[in-house]
Amino acid sequence: MKTYRIHFIRHGLTVSNEEGRYCGITESSVSPKGRRELMEKMNKFVYPPADKVYVSPLKRCVETAAFIYSDGYARVVPEFREMNFGVFEGKKLIDIKDDESYKKFLKGGLDNPPPNGESLRQVVQRCFEGVDFVIKDMMREDISSAAVITHGGIIMNIMGCFGLPKYPPNDYACDFGEGFTVLASAQMWQQSGAFEVAGKLPYFREQN
Image (tube, rainbow, N blue to C red; front, side, top):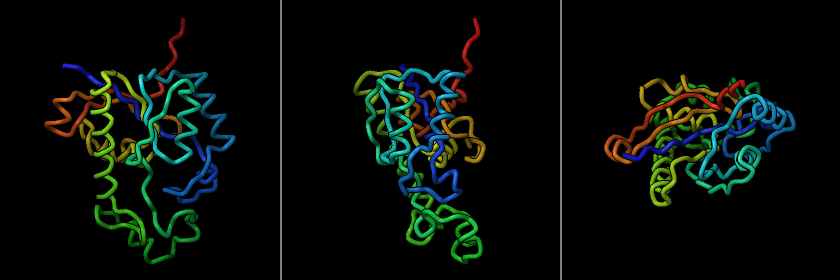
């Protein structure tokens, strides 16, 4: 039975991240500091090779994919975009912390979207669709390894909802330029909608 190795990697630090703003579907480029951090990780660690690269349509992910996998073609997968935070997009915590709609949103739940935003249930559904597309596309093209450059919240939900062993999504929080490798088989995915979480990345560089 063929195993498909997929590397989920969070984009680099952005200008909005540095400013502490809610940055879901809002566009924000990888900052100069973010590029330096990615370069430091590439020098110190190893990003695994990938036969194909898949990427969120937001430019911070496209930029990160081009930075880490400069020789690879990145296939845009809209389902891997970050959550739409609605009226909170671009806002700092200090600006909205006393807003009653924000307090309600913080209570969580699958069907508790921010005003004009996206519910967690909608996010989880499209995460499933995105992973399903990648695995089927890898099968069609007969490739064994792929990288997915996406967002921290998306990685947390993908790992928490579909990864084995089961852990809460917050346990899969990862820093910029970091992520997880998963091992998927067609049978396990089709029967259970699950894959095995194999470990964190990037990997330590072996010393000679």
